[in-house]
Length: 73
Image 1 (cartoon, helix red, strand yellow):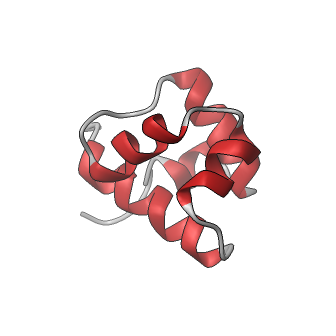
Image 2 (cartoon, one colour; image 1 turned 90 degrees about the vertical axis):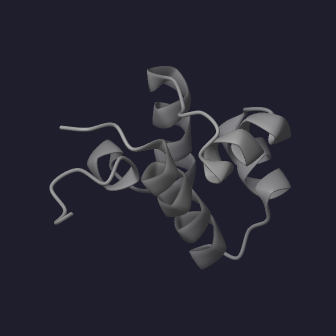
């Protein structure tokens, strides 16, 4: 399985927007920095496992959903 930072970033942004949140809201809910959220969503870097867990919990989704696992290319 390929780790696609761009795709994961788009997923994070999409889930965040679905909740009606801005990046600052997500950062606060996940207890991570605003700059980290921006880097993840831009695809500049991917979240660490710990950050991914926090994001998935804040966004009320599974890690599989967050990481775009088991989806067609």
